[in-house]
Image (tube, rainbow, N blue to C red; front, top):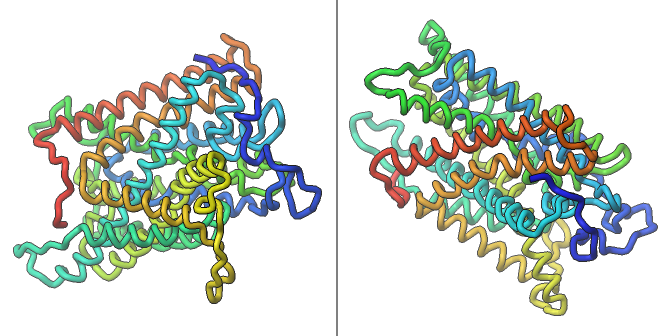
Length: 479
């Protein structure tokens, strides 16, 4: 299914396209306030969006794949992500009008024709964003529960059970997100991304240091060339599903396609937005791949086939250092949540404003003076709608494990169309690549290969989550 060039009408132009062109130097070519982002700010956005719990899962993935396939796949999918990101960022400008495409869906409408394809893409795009917000909620609440558990239980004898309740931590993170969600738009997240980058640089070395200490205590490198061996505990079928799961985890680890064009829309020019974004993507993916490789290899060398699903879960001392790392991860999760939720907010609010332009509840802004921060424009609809969304995601993540599991499956299935298929099809349309040429065939082979990875990872997800034993659809109350 190869897309054709879409017809450009008033209905499929972006909101920026409908604005008058400003002649002031303080305005960009679409009439919006001049964008001031640089390669460094774009890099901070990317690192915040990609890093986090995923980087600390690679030790488990290495345990399934071994010393040969593990590092190879980490490097391979970093190149795949970089290539897919560079061809997607080339879609920022419409090939017909030269106008900006500030979101993923704007780029799709400008390059791909067909209402059914557009609807499918729309559903996958925003569902996958919801997936990430729910995962950040669950991850942050777990890290907060870790802090509480260590504070309460670190001095208790290991044979005596000790628990903490999970729900208060979900609620606390939800309240934090309600406050942060009043940040008006994606462009104003810059300070938060740099804070999150600092948190990543804080907890990442802690994980590495703990793995090195564990490795020194063992006195040898654990693991094998081929990963977990087949035996009484691991059947051939189970080994196959775990390998598929690990491959899927690595493939999705670097994904930020959902918000790539939103990040690019913060970048100023000259130089061109595409040039700046490619440079930021190259730097960010290189740094993330390097750090991921170190975490995965050191974690696997320290724990071998017993590598935990989350690196910090393999350590219990020193608890104060683990608490510092957990607190940093909570802050990083708060910023990552905002990067992925702001596109949802923007889509709903622009749609409602366009439909009810005269409704004061939706359009009216109330100026509030905040000491040390200056004036803030409070919009009542934004306050109510964003609070409702965060509350809903928090409640579902807190109460229903089946919700998290289904959303995770959706996120796995969305990898191929969102990250690979649509960017490849848009690139073919933009460059007018003829069918059956060497270039076209290489792109189709890449797309087909990632489709196979997506199907295998989704099947493994279903088997492991829903068919692996007695399934519990509700979240446990205690941790």
